[in-house]
Length: 631
Image (tube, rainbow, N blue to C red):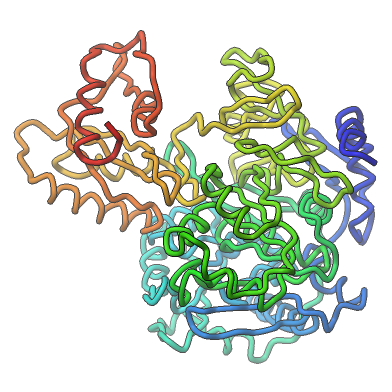
C-alpha cells in the first residue's frame, strides 16, 4: 500500500487499522478491546491484551533464532571498554537481575527509579523491571539531587538503582552523593539503593540502606516474565512542566509495543538483523523508545554508546562507531552535528572512515538549521531526515516512511508529513482550523494512535488540563507552526515556557523560581536565547530589590551556581542580566512571549496590552551589550 492508502485507512477507521498492526506483536492473549476512551478524554489502546515487554524484546528474539545475534554493542570511549552482548547473554543478565529484585520484594506495579549512566547495566535494569511488571522511572544522570528528590516523591519507588559515577568527557561525576542527597531531601524513603561500582570511582556505601550490585544478585535465580495487561504501565518518564513541577508521563505496555514495532520497521526502515544507533541517553524518551525497546522488539542490534560526539577522543568519534559496527541508520539531535562541525568544519575526519553501511540519518529534538543540514548531507551523501515527536508521544508524529517503497521526499525546514494515525491540524487561538501556510497551534485530532501517553502519573486530571483542554477534541502539542499545500508540517517553536537546550526540554518556570529565591532578586524572567550550537540557552533577566547594589558579575556567578545545583549542568544557565524593569501587561503579567522573540532575534509587534512601550527597546539594548542578541 502507498502512504496515501495507509493514511486514509488510519484516518477513516483507526481501530481497524491499528488492530491490523497489532498482529505484528506476539501477545500471550490477544486483546479483545482495541481502543478505550478514558475518563479524561484520552485513549488507551489494547487495554485487555496480555503480554510482557521484556519477553518481546529479549526472550521472543531467542525463540525466533537470534540468540547468538548481538543485541547491544556497548561502546564507551570514556573508559575504553567495548562489549558485544548477544540476545542469549542479555536474557541471562536480565532474568538474573529480575530474580534479585523479586527476592527483594519487587512485584508487578511497584516502581523502581533508575539513575545510571550509559552502561549495559542500565538497559538490564530497565528490562528486568519490565520482566517483573514493575514500573521503571529512569532519571537522567545529569539532574541534580533536588530534581531526583522531586521524582522520588512523585513515583514513590521501593528501590533505587544507580552507579558509583558517570563520565562527562574526562571528568568523573559521582552519582552516589547525589542519590544520598536526594533521598535525604525526599519525603518518601525507598527501602534500598543498589549501587553498581565502576572501577574508576568507588562509592561510599551506607550499610543500612545500600547494596552492592554484584552482591544483590549473587544468589538470585532467573525470573520468568510476568503477564501484564496492555493498559498496565511500563514506565513513568518525567518531562518538564511550565509550572516547574515535572509531569510523570505514563507509557503503557500494549500500545507502546505496537507503536514501537510499527515505527522501527515502517518509519525508520529497519528490520531484524539491522544495526541501529540511537545516539542519546536512556534518561530521555529516545533512549527508552529507540535505544532499548524499539530496536530489540524489532530484532535489531542497537549501539549503546557512552561518550560525546567530540573529544572521544576527537570529533571523528561518530564516524568511528559507524564504521566499526556497520551502522545502517542512526538518530541524533542536530546539536551533536553542530559540535562536530565546529571542531572539524571541512569534515576531514569523516574521510578516514568507511561509512558505506549507512543508509540514512534521522535528526529530531530541536530545529534542524539549513547550514547543518547542508553540511551533513554533503558530508555523508545519504538522506538526512528531519522528523518530529515528543516525550508524550513516545514515537514520531511526522516523518517519511523509510520502510515503504516510496517515502516522502524531504523538504528543508519541514519535519515531513504526518505519520498514519496522527491527524495533525493547525488551529488558531479559538480552535478554528487554519488554511495552508498559515501559522498557528499544532494540534492532533483525537484519538491519538497507540503508544502515546494517555495519563500523567497519579494526576489524570493534569493530563486533561495540559493537553486536552485548550482545544476540545484535540491533543495540544504546545508547538506552533504551519502545514503547506502538500501536507508537510513546519514547526516554528514552542508556544509555552519550555525551552529546548540541546534537545532537552527544560522548564523556564522552574529556573525562574530558583533565580527569584536569591535574596537580592525582586523578580525575574528566564527566556530562551538562540544558540548556534545548543539551539537555545536560558538567559535570566533580573530586577534587583531596591537598595541592593551587588556586583552584577558576582550575582551572575551565584545564580549560575544555584541553577546548576537545583537543575543540573545540562540547563546551561550561564547568563544573568540585570535590568531596571520587566515588560508587563496592564494587569501585571510579564510579557514573556515578546521577550522570547527578542532573545531569538525575531521581529515582534508592540503588544497592545503593554503598560510602557519604552521598556522593550531598553531591554533589547541591554541584551545586545551583553552579547545575547545581535544589534
